[in-house]
Length: 194
Image 1 (cartoon, rainbow, N blue to C red):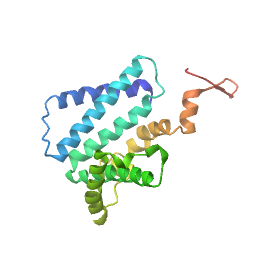
Image 2 (cartoon, rainbow, N blue to C red):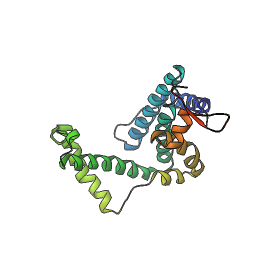
Image 3 (tube, one colour):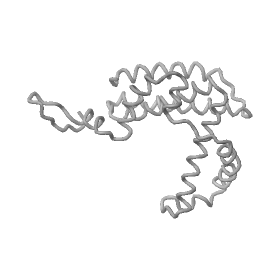
């Protein structure tokens, strides 16, 4: 997918999200509505960042941000399709916090003091309650592929998402795509900001 295709798709998503979001009043007591609002805001801010980068001619990071847009949109679609998808969003949220807490408790120097804040204490309590219940029920969480499959979007997973993941993880395919030119004799030249 070319950068211009990403931009056209993102501009379309932004326009649709703005039209939807302008008419939404969020019920703070509805977890589903709160999550939908947060995901929509995430998409709007990511798309705005991509459009700024594009306008500035900085193309190499667009696919990285696009991946996050695709994932947030995937979560919105799954949540609109199935109310029980909240369980997966919660599971991932709790799981990521638990990984941080575990690393902090093992003495990770980058997480010093993480467990001592009031906000963190509240999250720890929530995790102890809610996450343990989810795990006790046997829930394991969905893989990214499962999340696409729930919506019959395997083709998106194996194309657009795959391409943007390569850019996100510095896969050699992305590095060659952004930083090499194939010469007439078949050899490669390394490029910088081309």
